[in-house]
Image (cartoon, rainbow, N blue to C red; front, side):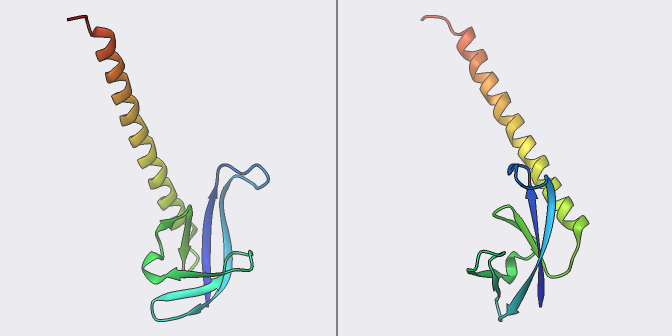
Length: 104
């Protein structure tokens, strides 16, 4: 059977930026899929419960579905932005408290 590995590249300059798909041949077992580890020569075990989730920057699907992968990566990006905004607000609040502090 085939698995479809979607990877988001925003970092590596030697590859095009964006979402890339790779089709890999896999052997199905009761709880996992066994396949070559995306061209590295090593065998990779993918748990069936992880299909459709973002794990190590990849989404693995049993059927090609670019829109699903794109939406999952988009949700991840939006969650990261929310978290970073909260961290920024907390850091600004700490700085405000420091600046407003007076010697007791």
